[in-house]
Structures are given as structure tokens and as C-alpha cells.
Amino acid sequence: MLGNSQVMFVDDEEGVRTSWQRFLQDRGVATTTAPDGASAIDQLSRHPVDVVVSDLRMPGKDGLELLEWLHERQPDTRFIMLTGYGDTRLEWRVRDLGAVDYLEKPVSPDVLAHAVERALDPDRVPMMIPTEVLKGRSGLQTPLPAEAAEQATVVEGVVEETTSVAEPSLVKTLGMVVAAPFLGLAFVVFLPVIGIGALGWVLAREIKSSFWGARA
Image (cartoon, rainbow, N blue to C red; front, top):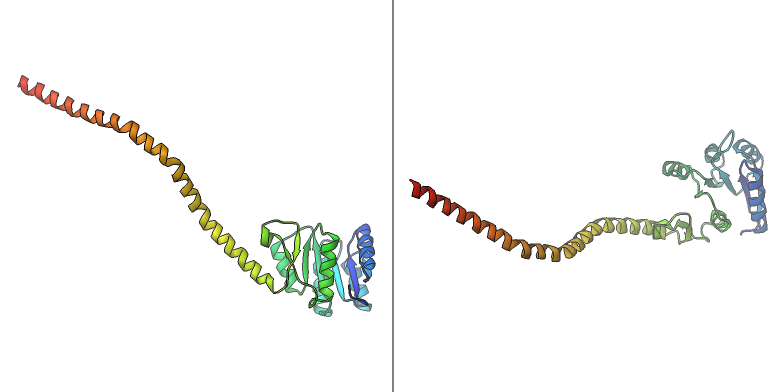
């Protein structure tokens, strides 16, 4: 990671803060911590940092309130949101406020390290795009150049639309192929029965007419 960079990790669980602080420092990033949004704001007011990585749900001021404060007071500070409660509307709100990344827990060390590196140097490090965009799987992320993000989303939409149209047609075709022999067999078996029945009905009608005519 870039030298002389400063990161703040905000989480209400001390063990989590300590682990991530040690991990980032081992990668050459000066890292401070805060137990909640209010403490983070107090520290940032005195000592701004390059990147803030924050959990969403915390007692007191949560991660969203911290991001709103940064958006108003320190807009140049890059922000990464961590949450175990993923929500599309929340992600839109977080990104509207300027967050550079939105990661759903559990987050692997490699994924977080990549997100921090990209926040520190977005021109050098490619964007992370969820693997489900490409493979329909969740919980993983795969490096992909930032300019490919929009293309991947478009490709996903095309694949979904094509699949939704093609699947019913394929099922219908397969059903017709499977049913065709049985329909043919039924036609062969029941056609003579139907013909004999119709012939019997005609003969019965003629006999009945002849009988009543004779009596008349």
C-alpha cells in the first residue's frame, strides 16, 4: 500500500478493531481506530485521515451518520462502509454520499485490503465487482477494471433477458418432442375404436329407422 497513508477503522467491537488495525499496519498503513461514530468524528476533527473504514451499526452515531458528517465537513476523505445488513437502498444512499466502496460482511482480508488500496489510489488499483454480476454467485468479489463495471452490468442484463425468453421456449420444445410419440401411439390405438363406434352408431340408427318403418 502507499506509504504515509492514514486509515481509520471504526467498529464497536474491540477485537475486530484490533485485528484489522494490526492487519493494515502490517501492510504499511498507519491505522487508528474508534469505537463509534461520535469518537471517530472527535478524532477526525483534530486529525483528518485519508480513508475511513466503518461498520454501519454501532451504538450512538452509526456509520451512516459518520459518513454524512464527512460528506459535509471533510469531503476529500474516502469512505468504505462495512455492513452485515445489506440493503440496496442503503447502498445507494451510501454511494450518493460519496463512499468509494460498500462491502457486506463477512469480508475477507484480501477484499478489504484491495478496497483500501483502491481508495488510496483509485487510478492504480482496479475496481472490485461482485462475482454474482458475472457468475450469479454471492459472497465473493473479483478484480475487474473500473471501466468494465458498466459493461458487466449491461452484459448481466442481456443474459438475464435472453435467458428469461429462451428458457420457456426450450421447455416447450422439449415437451413437444417427448410427447410426440405418445400422441402418435394414442392416435393409432384409439382411431379404430372411434371408427368402429361411429360405424356402430350409424348401423344402429339405420336398423332403428327400418324397424319403425316396418311397423308403420
